[in-house]
Image (cartoon, rainbow, N blue to C red; front, side, top):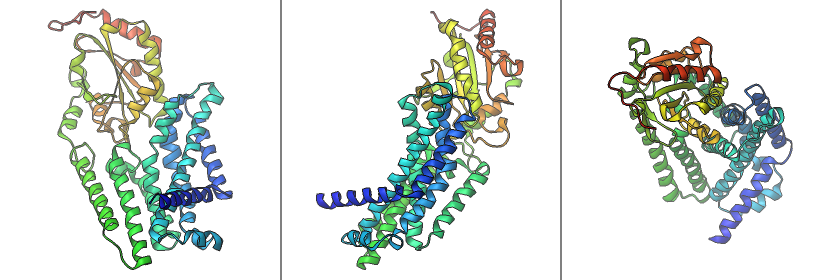
Length: 430
């Protein structure tokens, strides 16, 4: 068994080199890297912004279509390479040969994605002399592992089964459809979101094992039991996971969660108090507005889909340096389709305040309709910052006042601290 695994690893390594070797691999690396660098250059010069854009733009919009061309060529290499390479690989059963070559191709695509992330993070270093932490690279690279696995599996298996590189073009059309019509589709159909990893990871493995079972049947005239059962089991698991995610989340238009609807129904203009918040923070714990009773509350809204809004996080950190932290609570609300982005940004930036994700966000169309909290606050622009007194009554809307800078935030917090404590509101001891 061990010699077989070593031989298959050697074959996967050979496929890795074959995929990257030559003009095609170099062209994809240079093209994707240049586009990622240019995109980062057009955004705020920050490693955090560059890391987020590496996964949102570099992976989803640049590398996916370019890698499909490499995948199609790799899947049909038997028809294009010399006879020596083919003969050397034939002692292996066809299904094992297929799996090894798929792994080699997928690893090559991951290597190209590492280049894309590195080029994105190189931009703030070159233009702004800001170094990215290793954690930023790890997070950005990690967010692309499962999406690339899914798209590579579809392309590779499609070409292998159809025997025609046009199958990769069909996968590209599927990707283009999701890109153009994603605003009208539920989030569960987006294979790039980290919360959908269990779904699309299972579907990708099901496609690979199912194709391997087909190759085994074509080669040995017997399909066996293990591979078809494993493929079918993963397919059912992926579909059940998708169904479970839809019925237990706020994912318009497929499902509307009652709790999220209650959150959206708290209109800020209908009450002197700001709408309540009960959402998971960056550590996975439920954060409630009631936990800050007796404190001035600063609410900041930002989104990785609007990179310029991410600058509000550093402005908040600066504004909070000279305020009594025992009397002030700060909450940064992330409006993102991907639920992991806010936690990643919080750990990379080491921000001294709580960060939550509005898990009902579907960032499309009108801003105030993109998330339950955005609807509750009737957001008109990003970033937006609200400051309340100790009774959570609105004192300042900094976006409307045009004071979205550290000094303006600090001044608004000072005004809120000067407001008398409402009756019945206890102030925590310092």
